Length: 257
Image 1 (cartoon, rainbow, N blue to C red):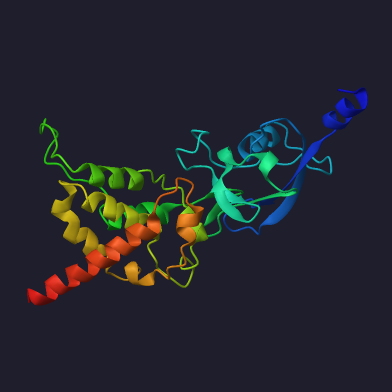
Image 2: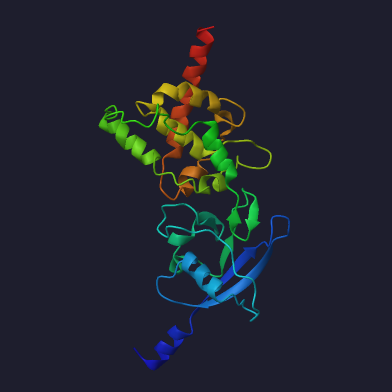
């Protein structure tokens, strides 16, 4: 490699335009940063570098950027943000695959706390609403659980990949300030726990929750969720399954009057 090529590589930089917000009540603004390029950079590692040395492109020292991150391997779902207009995980967003300048924004479906940190309480409230768990009677040893067919186990495994990351809500046009839509992830979790042999004991309660305001009827079938989901969860299939189960559930209730 010639000295000229080496010099050109050494001078290569990456530009970031980051939407910042100092507090929940303050106005958002954009700030530009420039980093020296390194192979295998991700948006997450770039934010870490900016946090260590928070100097913007104008040479001004600013407040460090705030965002959430835990696992750094697309498992926890904490580092969800909008990168170049697409909601995704910052830890798996390779700089080499992104068009510059790289625009980083918070998921505005959720209330912004500071910079990329958002309040995802609505997701956890939704899980409580649909009782997305399997209740057990006490903490004593209940022995082995009931067996299930392999095809059901494989389906449940796909649904269990959900990280509660919020990407599907950010991508869904039906999740907005004018709608109470519970979101695709919650419907998938109802299918997950209803399909469990023990969880099926409470499936009527979960299905009832999906038939209330903000439930299944709010889904517009845009299919953005299944395209955006970082874990490739078949959310539209789960929604279709729960639509069918919800219809049967309503008929059973009507006939039992």
